[in-house]
Length: 147
Ligand SMILES: [Zn+2]
Image 1 (cartoon, rainbow, N blue to C red):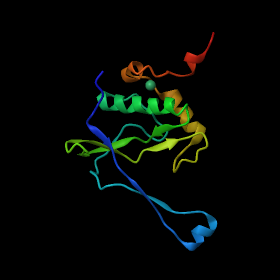
Image 2: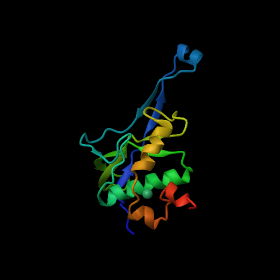
Image 3: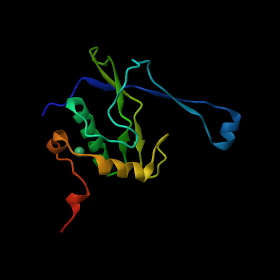
Image 4: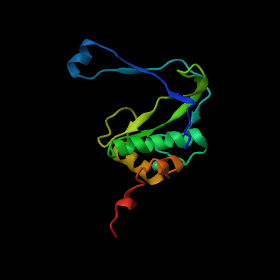
């Protein structure tokens, strides 16, 4: 099994505004800061859409989403996976994955976290690819049924 290696996940920073009013209310504005990138974007998944995908990179990314889901015991689904071409940390050209978001049970991980509905959408739509199967990732509820 040869997974895609021509991609990085973009480094990012969070910057929080600090104002007296926000300190009193415990509400803060937080900015996600990422390096400038190519404006041509490939969408691998949407916020609530998880297509089958074609090619080594899509299969690698989708298996990673499945791995993260299993590792978190069903508490994290990575979504809105998109990328653009750029220079990787290896100084070669490849795809920079940026601006991913998550669905979590409480729906409070950030903007567009649809909570249980987001997790369920992924569970309904994800079709395990060859990488999922090679990694022996569980393929869903049907595996747990005892009948
Ligand atoms: Zn899978």
